[in-house]
Amino acid sequence: MEVADDLREEAAVFRKGFGSVRVTAEISGCTWRTSVFPDSKSGSYLLPVKKAVRDAAGISDGDEVAVRLAIQGEDEARTGERTSGTG
Image 1 (cartoon, helix red, strand yellow):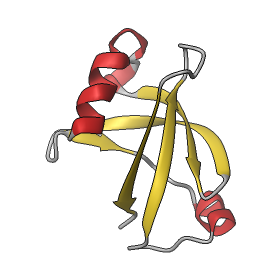
Image 2 (cartoon, rainbow, N blue to C red):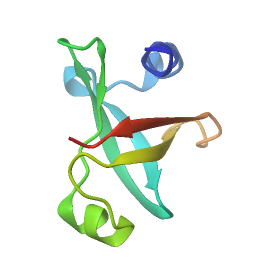
Image 3 (cartoon, rainbow, N blue to C red):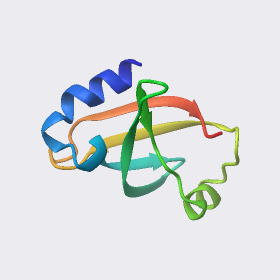
Image 4 (tube, rainbow, N blue to C red):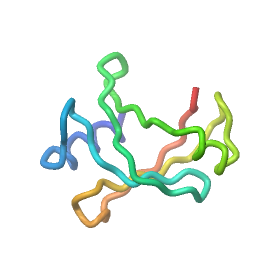
């Protein structure tokens, strides 16, 4: 939960509707702009990954991936990286 806690603190002023946070995400060299959404069940955030990105990154459901996030709105200077499953 450390990343979620950091994201909550760092993105407080950048939150949009439903608590979403605009980010630039990177998986396996594929970079795109999206939002992460708070998940009340886990107390963390959800990162939607479109099929086109999954295909380009060569990842499938259940794969462990390294994700790099940069919050949009603060010159993307603050990033976090964690490994997590896609499924």
